[in-house]
Length: 118
Image 1: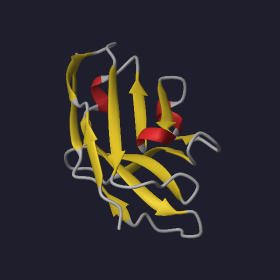
Image 2: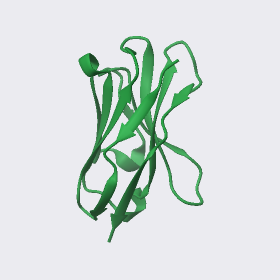
Image 3: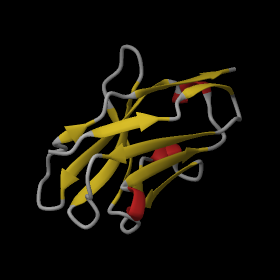
Image 4: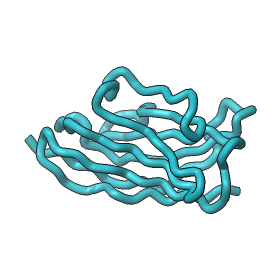
């Protein structure tokens, strides 16, 4: 079992920045991929970014060049640095983990709200 706790959400104006954190309850380095997803009101949850603890990072096209996923292996924490935020980035952001041999995101956090005003 892996518990994930997100933090760092809040309200910002368009063009601003936020850094989200996702703390894992135990060491997942080397065993899990760590990802960020988001869900806006009335929309389906969508992929944002994934990292294999600093390697093989991937991003959704709509955040490339604005968001950066990173990790602190010693702290079992993954971050999502969000710059140049837009109102359409408003959503609940979720952290998730899946074992490297799996295709399913098995573990997820409770989410953190990000609100971007114009």
